[in-house]
Image 1: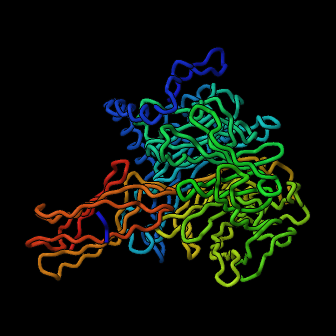
Image 2 (image 1 turned 60 degrees about the vertical axis):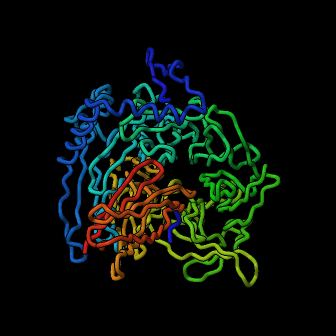
Length: 605
């Protein structure tokens, strides 16, 4: 039972300069300044332009039915290079390079994907008893083009975008990162987002960290994907601080009055995590010997920021650490995989991996290891085999990447931690770096990956976002195509890093969802309704919500509050509405989250 600052950017002679007058917000006023931007949301002209842009995208991206025996509602949509020119900032950026929508494909290839093909099977996307509301989902990701012919070293990327697309392949929002954050030159700093996710303090923004070239360091920003604020970008952590680009998470506020951000931290002798304030100062730092944490590429704070899940790439391990006031008094509860493994680890076939030497490693160079509730860790196994010191072992390098779910529990028999692979999916391609794998509330999972080898007749795209069912069927996908001329690998000359790459992808909604509704009105003057609710995106802590259930004539209402569970876990609500002539048919269920986003459903029958 339920109990009741974007900084304006100015350019001079092609040099990048921040207009410091626009960086006047204090750290404590960041959230307030974002809220003040709502005044700009009333700009009727901007709203009308946005509406026309989306309508134009919808008109150019109508899905083609690919109905099959298992799902006659299946569809396929192809986005072409011309679709990118529907967005003025993209058109403006390419115009500076002497290009337009009529330019030859070969000239556009270093800047725009040749095409993006979106495929969906609604019956698989909706899973078990989920309504059509699931099809209102949006997917966001950032892509970058490695133009290996342009230059050497860190200065070799020629294009990057942040995107939001809907389930039917319509581009909802699109921004050319290098043009927006740089001077539009071919090689300014080659900014491209790596860490990229919904901003849990304001759903109008995505939060991310850009990589400056391939340095793996850059500044952090919020991006106003909805285009409903005066500020398109908001610099975080003073805007000038270069941090590890692999991950970022907002600190859970307790008694603090300002925002701060958890990020990975690397140094010459010790690696770990740190908490950085909005003013760029280090609030807390946790660093461990490189034998335990080396090249951390994902940091997840759970249980109200008292526990950290850390992915240590070089040591091929994932650690669960109960944080103290410093690294010295923190407790490493377990280390999964790698030469220091404390977890008795079994693959999906029951084979034991004890850790220690490399032949006993279950996964290697993993990315985006994340706790998803129910003792489950989701991760990407890149299979780029490294030693503890980061030296590549090319003679035993594996040749296929995968995504997997591992359950780690404390054994009641031995008292030791035991991990078992409960699900694994072979991606069919190899990527030495990057990759993402996240739980969706429907029971499916979202994977992002890329192919470091040349295209074949069977795998002809360069980057992939795929929603995969637990029966290992692809329910939804966005495949990104590009020029493979310079691709190398598998004994072929060329550069394995050339082409379009993707680091991560996130699914989100613009309001909560309601599903699995049942109702019983057999008792006199009483209707008993049950339903599931999920918040608009996945978070790591409880978040407040409210509900109301109202009779069809509006005379009787039961309302209350609850907490959305973390990790997009189910929230099962049971509500009784009492009153004369109350019946199931016509009951209206409404759920509201802490962003004041609401959704409603009418019970039928």
